[in-house]
Length: 248
Ligand SMILES: [Zn+2]
Image (tube, rainbow, N blue to C red; front, side, top):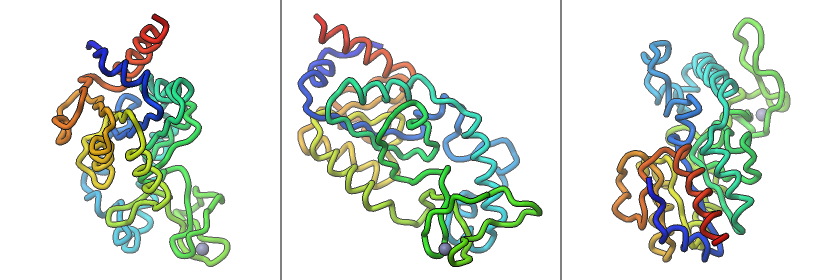
């Protein structure tokens, strides 16, 4: 994979850089896109496990599934792609990171500010009054955690199918897409809206737009540069080349 000079020039001139990440960034940490096809959960429809209706009709099942996913995420480690993005934050001024991932691996790799469009799987809050919940979640006899204030059921702080994205994160992401000079769309299939719109907002606003993905996506043809590699390979290489470029 060759890093085009046009990209290095754009990075050097950029006053602000925005990065959007998706599931592909965490794939190399062993976190599957949505659920593992290992049989245990394959009999369930995602809509049953990740929606308000699913939670209302079977909260025990939804809790079991999220505790299982949390275990996978807790045992996973950030990969070279996450670390490269954390380094970019230090390398570039006005750097904004937006993610569709809920696994918090960016933060564990050292990224200090991450806009989480789909919430995160680590935190919990009350389904009823929305207050954050920091109590125990592994209760005996399959009991479900309840809100100490209102008694409502506790849920993971992820965005479920059919729910609105967190307003603050989405506004910040859109603003960053409008205002950046370079936009990198990393490891995302660009099929889930409104996140898929962000690279297009950046393009229309005159940014240099880059896709980092081993595969073509629905927005590849809008891109100024496509790096056809995984983020764990492409981003460390990009940083290495950039450092050489600016020291020449
Ligand atoms: Zn409550």
